[in-house]
Length: 148
Image (cartoon, rainbow, N blue to C red; front, side):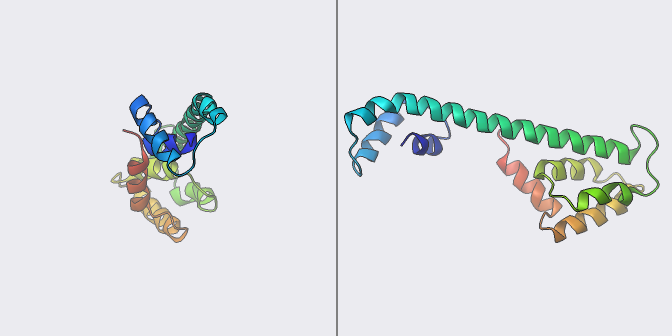
């Protein structure tokens, strides 16, 4: 029940919601006294576990965005000379499963930059679309999933 409560309330704790949720839950399956006593600690464990999962997601997303920024800087020549063939720099990323945050960050950084990155970005997004990760769809999905 603790997992269900956290999932339905998006980890927001409100004692009144918990009371109503518990009452509704017991209409289906009545708790034993030990289960009622264990509810408080179970709820704490589930909330901490959910917080750990969210922190991992935030950390991995941040790392993916930093990697995309480093690649975009290299392609734009911000950290040295720009490569003569940007597709050659992007080619190793075509064959790996990329994090959606990486795709979105790279796409947003390189969009409307012109120069020799435009054909490379177009070719890369066409290739990633073949893998099922269209850039526009990835941007929309990433912004929907991002916390406010």
